[in-house]
Length: 337
Ligand code: SAH
Image (cartoon, rainbow, N blue to C red; front, side, top):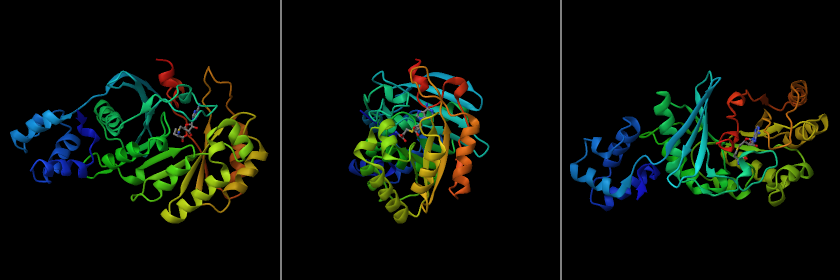
């Protein structure tokens, strides 16, 4: 049975037309599910009993289960169980500008980045759109507040699950539904070029972030195997094309790994790589984990790196830290459960 949260408004309209109903019923159903947050079709009382019955026979509703919630300083982490028993996680962060959620897009990940805890579990399968949508619905129900920002930066490589992730984006962006503005949605990729090429042709204003982490092919290939398939020169070319087509600014994420990518030399290489590109760099203090040998760069060195970028006119921020206290950061959650 297909899950109702897997359908875009357009698909629901098409389904309704195909069974001889008026397409505007789709908006009523969306309204019931996403605005009123009704949890069964029988509660959607502005549609006929027959239609409710048909929906009951055709679609399932909530299917993922909230297993564990942990709270820390301005951060909640959630572990969910999927219908088939697989587990995924999301992290919720309370900022002064709103509430953001970091959602997973796959069970496991095949990208094999050396520093990443999430990637230690190889990809089991892609998530379907509804499994990501339900992460948002269940968490909003838990906190009794609206999530304002969504980042697809949890476990998985979104562009290795392109169609489901874009479907998810269409569903949460729909103004008849959850209605999260596209400018408040960010997809992060480790640099899967075919995905970026497709993404630049989508409409909407969804943000793109690139996990860069190294300014040279030599170093990047060492810590991110994807770089062997899509080396920096090609990646930067496609990013420039993306910016010229969409007119949008790209974010580069750069994890600070002690004595790996954090010296003055790398800072200057990064300046050279990014000069003239409409972007900003987000320096991320690395979250150390038991199983992986990389260490976090000392704060003074992060600041020095930051200064070099800034003084060379590269827009740069240092990521505010969340989650360390509850192991919520980037894939540490599932690892312990
Ligand atoms: N595969 C996509 C989406 C996952 S994003 C991508 O690579 O962009 C997850 C982000 O968290 C990436 O930027 C990743 O490099 C970063 N990350 C992974 N492990 C981390 C850790 N231990 N500490 C801080 N950031 C980490």
